[in-house]
Structure formats: C-alpha cells, structure tokens
Image (cartoon, rainbow, N blue to C red; front, side, top):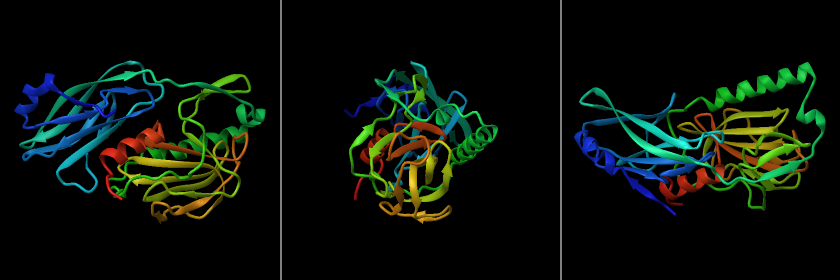
Length: 291
C-alpha cells in the first residue's frame, strides 16, 4: 500500500524555506529496499542532494515532468534496524542550507536456501583466480559508483524475462553448508539460449565473462541506476552501445557460479545493491507512468 508521510513535525521550518511539501513513500523501509522521496519545485529553491550518513544521493528532475523532483535512497541488505536521519541539502537565495527528516529501517522478511555447487566456486584457492575475482569486483564497483548525470528513462521498466521466479532477492545463501551472504537479485527460470531483454533504455556499461557471475551485462540507466544480467551464454551487445527497452541483450546460460541455467537479474543505486523488483515497482508507479 502506498503510504505518503507528510512531515508535520518539520512543517514550521520547511515553510520558512518555502518548501510546500515533501512526500516520502513508505516511511518504514526494509533493509535491501529503496525509499523514494518526491519534492515539489519551488521558486528560489535549488534542491541539491540527500545525505544519509556519509553517502549523498542527488536530487533529480522527475522523468517527463518539470514540476517535481525525486531522490532514490537505497538501503543495503546489511543496514541496521534503526531510525535514519536524512539531510536535504539545498540552496535558498544562493545560500547553502539543509533540513532533516527521519525514516525507519526495519528488518525484511527473508528466507534461507541451501545451495550445492563445486567447491572451487565457493572458496577458490588459486592465487590467479583470487586476483581475477578481486579485479572484477573493483571494476564493477567503479562502474556502479559512477552517476551519469542524465537519465535515459522515459517509459516504465519491463522484466527481462516472463518466466517463473525461482529465487527471490534477499534469501540467505548457504553454499555447501557454509553461510556466504544473501541472494543479491532475482532468479528467473531460463533454459540455455533464452533471449534476455533490456529492462529499460540504457547505455551498456559492461559486457564480460566473469568468474562468479559468468556472462555479464551491466546497463547504466542514468542518475546512478543500474540493472545487471548474469550467467549469460552469449552477448548481442557491446560496451558503449545504447539499447532500448525490450532490446535483446543476449542469451541466458549457466556460466559462473550456478547450479543450473537461469537468469540472475539485479539492480544497484549509487553502488548500493537493492531489490530489483521493488525498485521497478516504485519507479513504475510513481516516476515512469505511461506506456
């Protein structure tokens, strides 16, 4: 259910800054999920960013609208259950100012699952493999941390496959009896060779065969939003290409650390891993309305 939390406890101070309304969708946000904040544009106010701890998230114009702006605030799967103070940074009459608001991070309801794979994929001992994994991680994090200032999004997201979801985001992953973190995306059933679609318009940021994720495509949708497609068997795009929503990125496979063929679909915002389906849901309902 969509919940609009009007910041009554800040109403006096916000009116002093000529901000009529700040809407927070879902005042309570589970770990691994994304909060959406909507701002009404006001004359004399330049909205800049939202700071949470040491992280800053830019405030962008809403797609297809000049009247409102938005900020996506991602919370890591490992975020603590606690109240979070968010600081809105803006300029008023060329002076830098800030205002605060509160969100509450709650514990998400995530299950566990046991997975059995080759031991070489769980704890690789080869120095060469360890170096490869480290380099691939660093390369990906550099990409995820790059916030392209423009957005490529004008239409609602679609799903990369229309098939059964075999593993949801957030499940605790126990590999060969050892807890190795959580499931960082959504798995779709897909036999080898199934066409994989781009979830939305984007620039192709990476096309590579990686140790854990196998055949990998990363899409930059602009403004810090990325979608990721893992375990592919073939590519139909190359780095730097611009793709349209629904364009075929390549074919599904069983490369990397897998128990069988499928598509692993995930999302990042400003390098923070989030539930891709929840992100798509709030984007489609509130920012990317239309066909």
